[in-house]
Length: 103
Image 1 (cartoon, helix red, strand yellow):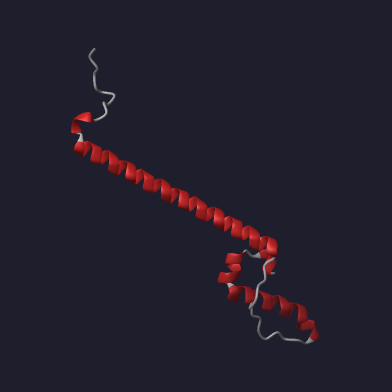
Image 2 (cartoon, one colour):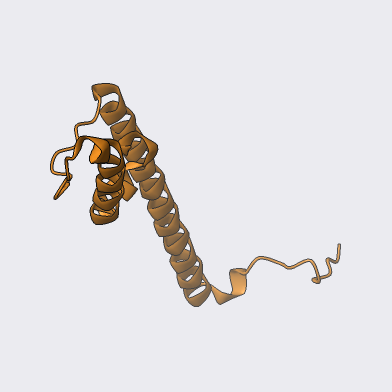
């Protein structure tokens, strides 16, 4: 039953999964006169390959976030340099497409 859930669901919905498991066990053992009183999910072991895949996915997500943060920092620095240049050298602004050129 745990194989049908993703890790996030297993960690977040232990109670409901336990209740579902108890229902399945009750149905299977009712004919024998056995009543399951309690089911708890205490220890979930992940295969090594799955652990590696999850670690690689998390690392890729961290690297992507780091690249976005670095790009945003470069963009802010670029804007600050542009504003500083406009303050220091107001006459050297770049011509816009509306400016006319005379030869």
